[in-house]
Length: 222
Image (cartoon, rainbow, N blue to C red; front, side, top):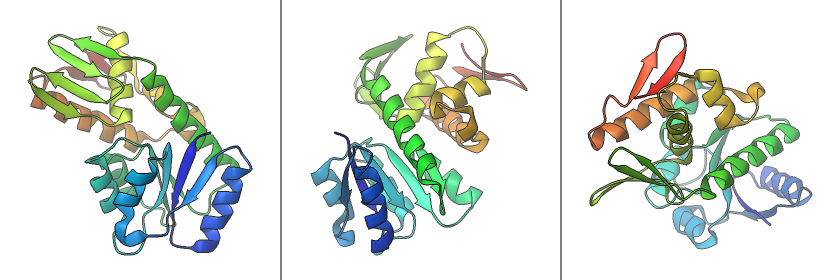
C-alpha cells in the first residue's frame, strides 16, 4: 500500500484528505511536527507528499527545496492561490505536479495515481546511456566519471523519452502526455521549466546543446 504524507496546517482539511486517501486504498500520514518537517518526512519515507505552500515555520516551497537536496520523493504542491508564479516556482524547485484549492477530489486522486504511475515506471528501468553519460534511473542521477548530478523524476522522464526517440522531433504534446498521463491536465509552463532545468544540468557535464528546440514543433535530442 502506498504511503501518502499530508503536509497541511488546517487540521480539518488534513482529516478530510486522510479519509479520502484511506477510502481509496492509500495509507495516509498527517504531518504534525512542522518545526521538524524535513526530518519527519525522511523518517516516514512516504511514496508521495501532498504539500501545502502556506505552512507554519517554513514556506512549502522552501521545504521542497530542502527536501530535494535529500530525496526525490514525489511531491504534489497544494495551494489556495491560483498563481502562475507559485506554479512555476514549485515546478522549478522539483514538484511533480501542482493543484489549486478548492480541488475536485476525483481530480486529485487522478493526479496522485498519475504521479505514482510514472514514478514507478521510471524505477522499472535501470540505466540509460547517452554518449559518455550514464543516467541512473532508480536514483535519478546523471553520471560522468566521478561527477554526479541529481535530476527530478520529471526531468528524467523527459530525457528518457527524448533518448528513446533520439534524432526525431518530439512534440510538446507528446512530452506533456508522458508527464501528466492525461491531456486534460497539460501545463505548458511546467514543461518549459522542466526542459530549461534539464538543459542546465546537461550543460554542467558538457552537453549544453544536446536538446534542440524546433520552433512551433517540439524538441530533438542530438
